[in-house]
Length: 197
View 1 (cartoon, rainbow, N blue to C red):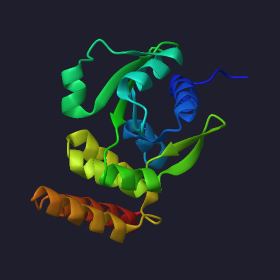
View 2 (cartoon, rainbow, N blue to C red):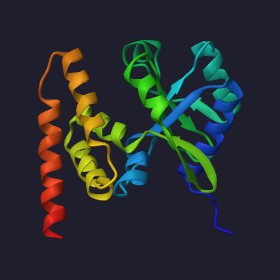
View 3 (cartoon, one colour):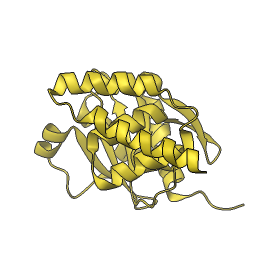
View 4 (tube, rainbow, N blue to C red):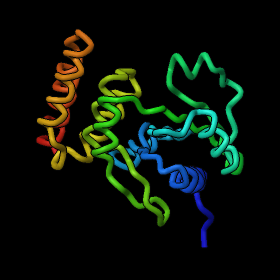
């Protein structure tokens, strides 16, 4: 029987620890892109976690007992400014970034997460629509490539109106108007590509 992949090993250990604390969570980032779009090489795992009433210190202690340690890049100031806990899974050596969920959009993404089987166990994964939204928000070249991959693979099943509504809401909250046009440009490209195939 083949051995479990490093990301799967990390996710299994994390899932077990988060279940102990009753935390809601979802996988996002490049690992989610691999599930919903085209595979992308990555060396880390990104998750968002709603830690609830567990304080950050107790939460980190629980993760430590489950085989994770804080990364050397950790500082209280970094966590305060970014809401990201940088960890390392000791068994695999893989980095794990935990985004501490806040109210609003991340709660919406938690509610919409889709349970997917990864190496024979259930992992909550950000929905493909919400993944597109996060990638539009990030807007880097690799994020645009990720959007293209998801649109190419999932175009027939995506809830486009949900994506548009969510991006419009974010634009209004941030006072900017460049998110929806970016999505529409990529959606037009994806439609054109499908028509040529």
